[in-house]
Length: 225
Image (cartoon, rainbow, N blue to C red; front, side, top):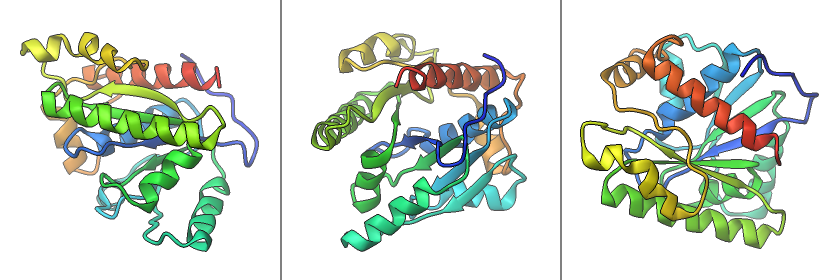
């Protein structure tokens, strides 16, 4: 897909990255998705709501083509949640990508409450798929409680090892979650090495093309909301 038509101020699409299971590439997908959208001309801001601060740490050691801001929410009081929500909604961007905490808590719930779309990264192992099913169930409950028909859910096969049977079959396996499944992101050394250096995968690399395909899937679904 080509260049992105910019929206007006206050019209940002809010994309959350959420998983109750760690080690599934949540921050990696967050930053490389932001990179693709930014290269296509969109104004992108990543908000790191995870106390682990991995996205913010990568930004500190690298030179990313978009802004990354820490925005924690560690209190459950209504005023704290309202202030956090205003800060997110007030971000001047076309896309705001929220890196949610890996554990359940106020920020995890707040991301699900305001996002237009939630990406659920998932590996090919049985434990990964169980974690994805749990996350999808939580998002569905938030969607029902909010009564707004959102967030949309897109399951993202992540860190897929195509040399294994589970890796080759992961897309079909994840269809059992009855939510749309994005093109898979393959496990490659370049992805981990780039992140460790504060960099993003090259756009013309095989991994870069996979993240571009993910960005296409995200945009297609967002345009239907």
